[in-house]
Image 1 (cartoon, rainbow, N blue to C red):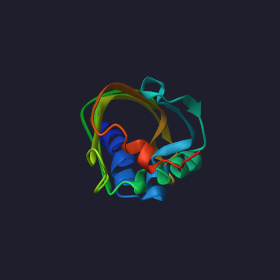
Image 2: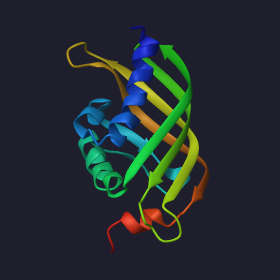
Image 3: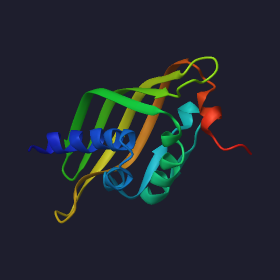
Length: 150
């Protein structure tokens, strides 16, 4: 498998493992403390432990009946032990029986930074992930329905 293939497999794994709720496999796609930037979508930019990121995602995504993240058009640039990936993204969130509609879709692009790690348990891992929001449709109230009440 080429470096490009390994890099795309890592990026795809982030979303596939999140959708299948395989948190330990998803966590392995990241370095120990990646930077995650959701500022374009009412979020924050922060460096956090990959285990904390998995805890956050595992407390949110499984509350939907299902989620499906689609990414495509990977543009990969490799420079030695580092790589960047740009791709399109579309996330579907489905909550059966939700008032006002059970689908919420989010569209945008992603910028990933990856580093090559030592061979034993290593390979290419995400060191930074930025979501660039463009559009959402469907029931925009679904996140509030599955989020804990404050």
